[in-house]
Image: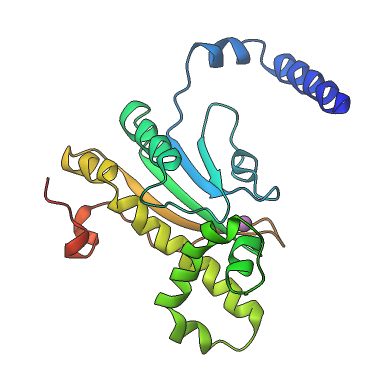
Length: 207
Ligand code: CO
C-alpha cells in the first residue's frame, strides 16, 4: 500500500509540473461532457483508454456494465450526469473477454454475484436462437458481450431521466461501444440512440 501512496505523490507532482494550475482549476468545479458506464474489470480504465484527463469523464462502473431499472446507484449517477452536469453523451462500453458475461453463460456458482448476473442470463434467453447458432464458445461469449451493450443502451434510454431530458429538448445521445482487451481498441457498435422515436412504442413514456 505504501508504494501506491508514493506513486500518487509522483503522479501529482508530474501533473503539477506539466500544468501548475491543473489541480486548482479542477478543485473549483468539474464539467465533464461525457458519462461512461463500463465494466469494473481492471483492464478497462475509462479515462485512460479514451485518452481523457481527470475532470473530463463522469464514470459509473459495475460488473458487466449493466443498467438495471431498479439500481439506485446507477440511476443516481445517470440523473446527476444528465440533470446537473448536463452531459450530452452517454457511452455504454462493454468489453470482449468479460468475466461477468462468460460466467453468466455457465452454470458454475460464484456466490451472491449469481443474482446480478441473472440479468445477463435474461439477455441470453432473449437471443438464445442466435447465440446457439454460433460455433465456438468464444464466438458465443463475444456476441453476448455485444448484445449486452445493446441491451444496456436501451435500458439507459428507457429511464425516466433520459425520457424527461428528451422531452425537454436536451441534446443527449446514448452510444454502445465495445473494447477489446487483446488490442486496446474500441469499436462503435453503431447503435446510438438520440431520439425517443428510435425506441419501440411501448418504451416511449408519455410524460
Ligand atoms: Co467485464
